[in-house]
Image 1 (tube, one colour):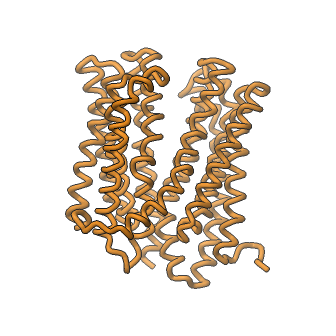
Image 2: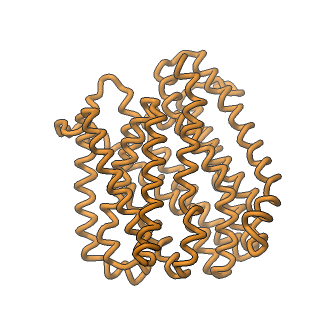
Image 3: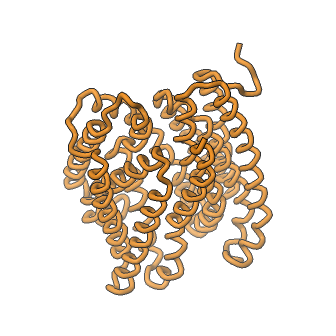
Length: 418
């Protein structure tokens, strides 16, 4: 009963910590625009894109498999964690060696200095270690620990970036050094905390290695699909309409993404709670889960409507006239992230059953649909075409996943299975 009450409290903590973490680009923007030119921002954008691409390859989604395994009494969590981290370390070394040979070639295409590419796999490993600790805290409902850790790491990153860029007069290098140092320090602290939980230095298990690979590898296309959805529209807009229109679209996208921030915070509280209820298997718990899902669908659509009402104020007082054309895009983007939140509510059943290949197939299909729609809509309908393409792709992902999950686990939805 206490866990049921805490879901609201947990969501509040997750929301606050996630908002502060996501606020870094906004907090730095007024300062960095005085010290960095547009080309510097381009390097930072490409660095972040490659880093996001590298994280699932290095970590094989260990943070997701840990969430599923951690609540199972029969699992030796120390051995599972140690095995998974050893695999991640091995993959980091392999990718780092590969980048030593390919760094020069990649530098020509993505315009990121090869010096930083040499360390990007290590940077990805830092991310993985931190996210593993945060995943464990979510399963333990240790939302306060989660919030404190993430907020402190965020403040350290903000301080270091400002110190390197302003104090030491570095350009984009200062931003990258600040991010890497903050994540590196955070990963060291995370390892110490994992060790205190007796989750390190366990025995290596081939069975756990096979489970981590079987669970995590199918999710790699799913994770990379998210990177494709986040970046493909902007690249295609740049190709057809130029950087100025891409800037207008990006601002509108970020405002609509506020819905994504809220639904992601709820999902972090929802997943461990839903796993516990599914583990219990009672019909009353299933009925409650369905009711919460329906309330959620209504609530997130109301949030989209509220955001739409606030757009004139947001653009007039916070954004400015130069980006006012993007106001018409926000509703479509916000609806897309609302559908994405709905998808997360129903995909929990597939994750619980560990049928991650279904998640991978669905996500990869959505990414392909999104790219195709972008190439179809952007040349003809411009920026609004990109926003509508995002909404359609995410809506399709929700509908397909809901249909599949309803066949895997019998839940009392508004229809009855035959």
